[in-house]
Amino acid sequence: MIKLPILSIATSTALMTLLSASPDNQLMTTDIVPVSGYDFRIRGKEILTPTPGESPQITGASIFGVRPRKPVYFRVTSTGKKPITFTAHGLPDGLSIDAASGWITGRAPQKKGSYLIDLRASNESGQSTRQLELRIGDTICLTPPMGWNSWYVQSEGVSDTAIREISLAMNEKGLGDHGWTYVNIDDCWSGLRNTETKTIEPNSKFPDMKGLAEYVNDQGFKLGIYSTTWMSTYAGYVGGSAPNEEGDYSEFFLPEEERENPHQVFGRYPNGIRKNLAKVGPAWFVDRDAQQFADWGIDYVKYDWKEWTLEKTEKGYWPSDDKPQHKTKESGIIQRFYNDFQSLDRDIVISLSPNHDEHEDTFMPEYSNLWRLTGDIEAEWHRIIAPFEMEDRLALTRPGAYGDLDMLQIGPLGKPNRAEVVFKPSPLTANEQYFQVTLWSILTQPLLLSCDISTMDDFDLNLVTNDEVLAVNQDPLCSQGYRIASEAGSWEIWAKDLIDGSKAVALFNLSDKEATLSLTAEQLGIRGTIRDLWRQENLSELTDTFSALISPHGVAFLKVTPQE
Image (cartoon, rainbow, N blue to C red; front, side, top):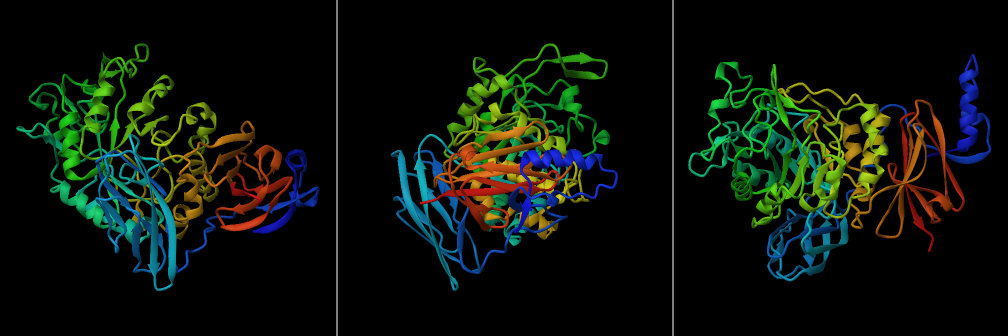
């Protein structure tokens, strides 16, 4: 980090006005020196995160929730030279740790409460220790999920082979060493319903779903899956309800010769809507599907579910703008859905999408671990900064319940609703990618990648393997970030309270020009040591004012630790 003389906010703003009026634009922000500060600008795809050393360093979440008597699946993760040996002291009866993989498995105690477990990771270069809180109670998913989703990568081309390749790549690229946990199959995996059990069968691209889950576990991850309470998924595959008790959808099938994909029985989006199938049908099979997911070894489910009125048009059915129907507790459907998963002998994280209306925020946290606040995200700047207008909704975050802003738009991306084979670098600038990961971390957001892991370059990996940045997201206090100061459309300063009494602070430059942002100890409420989280180095003491020169669409991400 280079220390430079830079400007206060007020001086910088005045100078920018002068610069815009200057015909040769030669005057630089460093020509006037009223305040001392730091230069956080980056130029291109700069790698800011230092490479971890050979000695072990335990990473990932330091708290894990499980319901009484439910199976426990938690992996202790660590960076460092392999092989690494893991031990855990203080495990309750019925639990054990695999020394080679770090998996803690077994069955949780019946009595609610917390168990403090002393973890150790050791190799030939040294050892690392950390305490894990195993909390037995009614709430799971005590920190935001971290993982990967197939939608922006494989989409209609998702398959057993593709998921195995991704989980292997996540292992080989070292993502699991930094606490990344889930490998999630999105839409396009399902076939038809079994005529006897009435459960959804995987299509021919998934010959052994249970075997796939075991393979993903062996790579160090958990498997997730997708469905919907509707009769049709968005992509035109069989959903969680049906038009009849036989689970027979054949009257709505698109002729095979007209299908883009053989198992896409209703046709490519938006055919499921056009056929009046994008709604909960007369026959409910979510309970049977949920049990099948548990039997397969699934640990995460994403359910699309939007209640609306579908009206007939010249092109088929389409959602009515003037007659919306919203999810309500009174309908009993969401309670039934939740109970189907609660009754399983397995804890499964529940993610509901797509975007929900604000009034649904009042009860969504009761029935899901994640509920989407927005529509599907895109790698566009206006979508990345949209959360600044959602402070009230984001404030509902608590352990086990997260208003979801959708996936990270970094790494090699494809396009949904096709069988993608070509992946292109994110169209976001390097600054914008640092911006999104920082914002999602301070907002205690689920961190879900949806890129081609195997072709991630060093810059991409640097964005998702900085353990100090990820620790802010995974902090066990699970506090939501909050606004310290802002100027609409120009800059934002947000903070997040951390369990050790320190605070994470992010200074965001929303403008198209370099800007100098300043933070005072009075604004933050504490004084202490300032650490640059992306570069992992201490800078100075915050005793009065800290100033930072930041690139257009850039960010400075800090941690302020109180003086003892």
